[in-house]
Image (cartoon, rainbow over all chains, first blue to last red; front, side, top):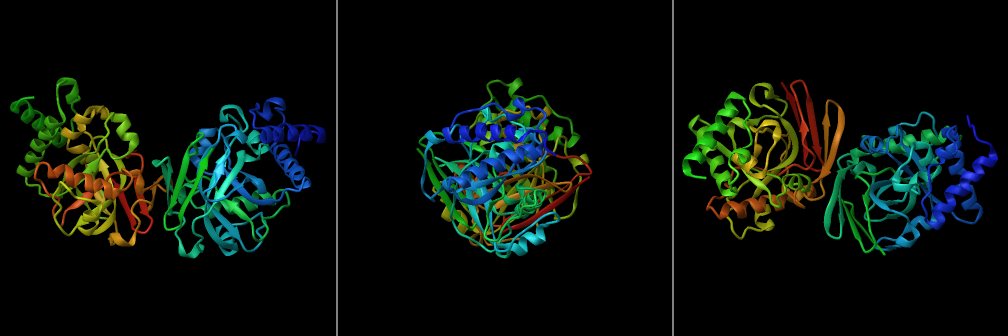
Length: 263
Length: 261
């Protein structure tokens, strides 16, 4: 159940989207409306999404956030969350990410799933996800919470599209049955130095569990994951701060490398 | 430090290990202790173990992660010796409550050599050519120094804080796996507690073995065919106690598990 009026949802949608588009920090939406619910927070996210689509932007995928127990503890939240990816979030492999368009970006190494059949919750489990998966492919997410100092609560982060801002996908695609995604290793390097390592199981024990959770969360709103959806399942490594001039290079076990530059 | 002090420290560390009574940091008692002193102390401690009937079966490399190097304020790894008394088999109970004092588990890749390696001048290519197979491994480190209050000299003197270890269920040809990107997942009592990848140890576990071969080469000591070389942890150290069960899997290599009693 929501506690906010339609006008309040629209006000928060403008508040969050302006901060994203003009790259400035804001205070948490829950400070403005402490009575807001999770449903209200998702209503804000979906309202911004609707506005972007109305302006002609295309939704190109979904992302899961806060999918590791460590990350949830670090951020003081109790549950993962999702967001959407818009056409202009996509950065080509080897491309440049403009710091002027962002506030305080961090990068995370992830595994993305691409579906070949729809998934609709409730009740979606890992087996359903495996059956509906076309292939997996490496991805790097750039997150950029619009909240000051990355300090937020779960409702605020949901309203802010789960900190989504840019992503890069590349390397080699693989069939899920050919890879053990739980032990799939990743090595993150910035300017040639190893800054983080991890393996797929860091994402809820199995990245496919993250896709199942997305389907079930969307199901609560009567939505589904359509066939052909690109889904980033959540950070395998910690989120690492990047600065102007940094070159990033993320190596995936048997699946190649993704690189990009922050300018 | 003079010869007598070095011998006395090595004896104290050996007794501390046998009696399970931790010592004050050596670096508090001997402020002038050098890295060479520390290695000489570790050799005395090793001598006592060999006198007691133990046999050297390999070597371990420690302080390979940036986090641990920063903690100890050093920018190179260290090493210790492995003996037959430290080795346990996959699935076997590991008696930490009677053998160790303040155990912590690390997940590693072990190298089994088929040829001797004598530095200097050893490259990663030499190490790979001399490696029979790599295996998943738990090393359970322990410190004979109170509360792990170690500086680099303390841990070197204490045989690189070596405790016990268990090798896993598979041996894999090193040419079948990318040792820098292979992922590791560590579980304790059924929960995933950490993940990492090969590059967490000095950029690659192979770099670690190369470093050891070249470092020991300065003293004329080879890594020998048949030896087990533990290449350094890929994940943070995890304190363990009797009753805990841990398992790890490494992408493309295999699993290891251990029950602590």
